[in-house]
Amino acid sequence: MALNVKVVSATREIWSGAASQVVANTVEGEIGILTGHQPFLALLAKGEVRVTAEDGSKVTVNADDGFLSVDHDTVTIVAGDAVLVA
Image 1 (cartoon, one colour):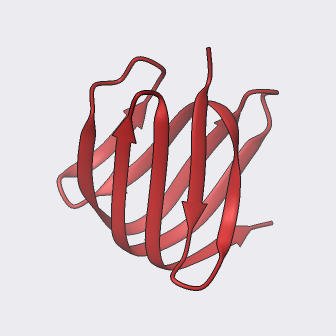
Image 2 (tube, rainbow, N blue to C red):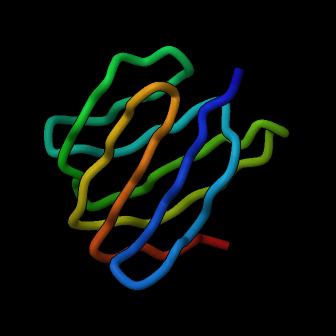
């Protein structure tokens, strides 16, 4: 079972796909999301969103000003500003 992850900015989709883990900075601190996580909604803090894709590759996005939502193994990150780190 994998997480279905979508990271979008105000203007475009940054990354989407299957993942085993997501780690993000919220205004209340850093959170890690794995499959089976309870439904959750949080405000993003400026910082990195780190995604471990299902194949083990790492994806890093610098994000600011937005929210993170978790529901039924679907993680949606909507940021006002987001840039994929090479």
